[in-house]
Length: 238
Image (tube, rainbow, N blue to C red):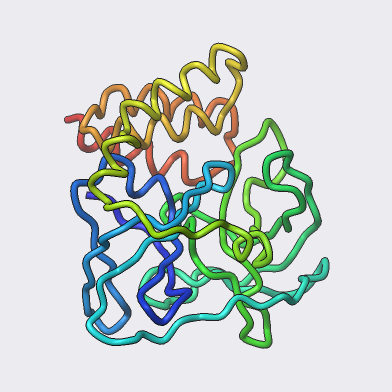
């Protein structure tokens, strides 16, 4: 079981959320702030660079969607990351602009983003959704950033693939293998250690999860979610 944030981007049940949450999933549900749950039926778009997917929820009638604004945040502008079920997580601000090779221009923020918040909407003071929350653990610098709305709008949405079929091709085991190859090239890649730790935790391999989360705390001691994940892994490892 894994919980993540996301939000409706279309009235027909289109949702943007974290790709990591759906790896190897036999089924998934979207739960709204009023407690209604909708089964996720298809993956409409996938973007490994950002770690996001657009999925389709089976909704009996049109839903209210958040529209992605084209507004460009300015350095120092106040923002809010909205968590699961619509609760505000952290008031923060835009601290700078950063270039990520696979993503292009993104906006660093001071608000903290835990892995469970990847895919959350980021709102400016005018209530506009200016992007989607994400994180990337580099060797230094803030791991928290906004993926601009324009990037999300440009994701190619197709007819979709059934969730169960998509999950067979995108398992935690395959993700671990892929990232371990990355670690062979760069043994100091904190982000790969983090994702492998999460995948091991999802698989119930808590001792392995402890090992990888410990590496994250060594490489990025300023990243609080590493300690949160490490504590949970220790708890379940017995």
